[in-house]
Length: 395
Image (cartoon, rainbow, N blue to C red; front, side, top):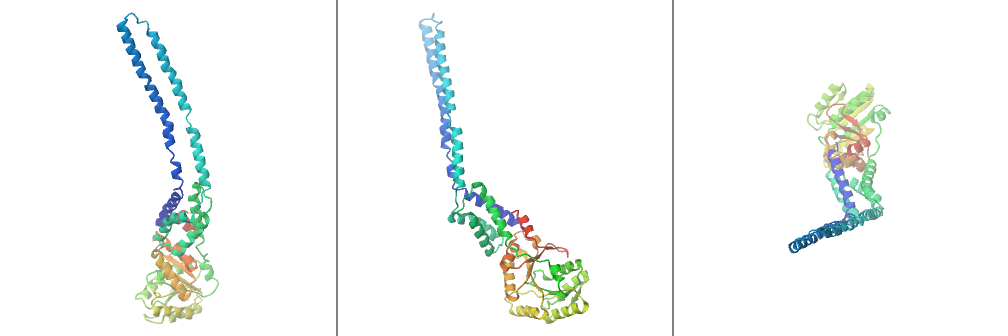
């Protein structure tokens, strides 16, 4: 989970940091001074090479002298002083490298750059340019615009027109992301603990077609049973073919009673009968399955509102597919506007590499995420923990 988003965020933070250093790089490229410091060495080599012709002249003079006055071979010592003159140049050559000002210039340049960076302030225009890649990474991973706007605002307050050193930019961005994302989630109460507060505790599950409502109802039923509570399930999805059969199969596997009517029956009546059955048989929890629907289907939306009026659920949970990203967030908003959902279950979170829905849905709807689906078995329903998100994103 979050694998794709994690990689994109890391690249975006790195790009953000590099852009913040763009203004500093030109000043570091004062390498012409190195050429000046290297030039004395070349001059030394030239100096070493220049005396050589003198040697040749001396040798030629010797040859001339030998030809003119063969006996004057003893004048060779006179050549030695000239050699000494060549040797005397060496100390002068050795002194020139010692005069190199490299050690003094480098620290001076570095310290000047450090001071400038420490006092550097990122302007609004620079920030807009630097944030663009991070913004793209978030949007590409289905993070809602409202969340992107919050992250941008938080980071802007932290970094714009504030003295920032080059080495701190990456840390500041990461800390700001961690703080922003940590503030996105509404704290969820323990669903089992809430169910123990009232008997029977009625929970209605809503969502679009294929979001995994029926399967997640069975998972919640298993969780209630593991905590010593006795659930009953209501097959109030009388619209979809095989919906009742599917819930009955789960009921048989778990040993949970399923209340159902025929296909096409009044869904609200099924929900009502399930609640009455729970009261009569001393069951602890009623879990109501409903037909998947889009907000644009007015008939089904009115039916859902009727179920809520008749069954009077203590909790209304929206079930959405995590992998659908922004669509999931939008659907949650629409159901919340229609009936006022109390919490969220995100299915298929284990195969969601982007994670945009998990990061966005709670902030946009202002509702807590109770569980995330992490597999196909009844035990693959984990309580949502924001710290797991931080750990998965390596923030």
